Length: 112
Length: 433
Image 1 (cartoon, rainbow over the protein chains, first blue to last red):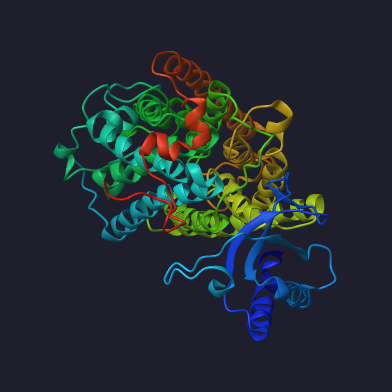
Image 2 (cartoon, rainbow over the protein chains, first blue to last red):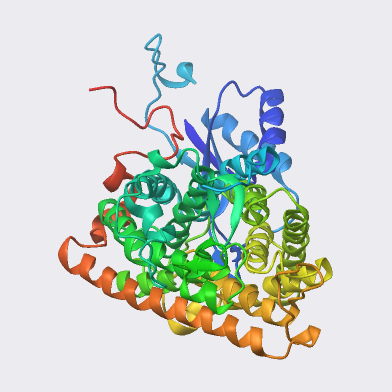
């Protein structure tokens, strides 16, 4: 099993969510995040004093997937989230030892 | 007391003005509160609210008498006695002449000025002040700085026939300060500079981001200040008459001019016109027109406002050059705006719009009025700065003026009030016990 973590532009969350649902992904976790990559930050000015804001608001989306399905899910996210502009975000996958559904106690791929 | 009868129109306007000026202090709390970080928003607002509590109490005990009492016949202070307001219910106001409004209404109106003046200072010492020390400061500062200075500037004496007793020394010298450019704004601005020096810089100043946490609150606050300021300036006519009309119109157009002036500086210098700039520009304009609002023509009010916006927008950068952390620019806005407005009376003042006014430099009056204005500004600023410096030093050395570094970093809302301004998450806090 894999955990797919995607850091996305907040404005693309809705598109990605719909695309994943259409692909058959049954659940996901979304949290607010902030950070920067190559995009770096921006400058804000308050009464003439300039502040460099290097942490930009992003959303962090997490999806659990079968090993076999993971690559396809990543593709769906890339397609839906891409604008071609700098700052579109990043996706990575990590191996997962165990998954348990709290309600039933099911384990492994059954619980996804 | 006299044959003059109470005028209900004037009295009604003064009652309304009194309520308008009170609203300025909560307005100031929003204006300042929005500008600080989330962790000190409540403390910033509380520093304004506590002045309402403390100064109102002192005012009825001895404050009104110390500022406006005439029996002592001193140019420096009023009477050193209890205010005894309860015995004055049927008296009219006598301040350089009889005004047909009850003296209790005058006392309530002037109280609002005494409340907001120390509140203005609090912006200079945001995020780091011990609340009890601030409360002690407000009580003592009002007593030894505001009440006497209000006497110097606003007390025109008890006039019976042609005899005037107990007028303040700046008022009788002919300083023209209609609603408090010197007594309120220069006074608060100079004190703010002194306290910023005594308390020192905030932890992380110029290193970490200290962005305003809520600009909508700042805009709300500046709007409330603007609204209340109509009572501050037009109410200072102590009557519902043409002078009040002139004052209210000048207040509006000068503020508008300053809003534009500040934004012009920002657009040219930084490339963007900001909402904080609009709010700050409006307040700078309100400050600058305060001493001048009943002595200048409306076209001059626009010019005074426009330059107030420009001067103050440039002045707020000075603290970085001189290295003092006047956190919310009380010096840059109130001291600089107050000085400019007070001097502007000496330039644009004209007896054409107000028969008791004097012609300034641009109306052929020479530099006589300008010199008086400069003298008034200088003396008030010097007195306020020096006394505040000493008072601040004594408070710092005795009870301590500043919270500990840990408390400052964690936030003064928590250390001083055991509260936080915003509950952002449903799961982050514990239960009732």
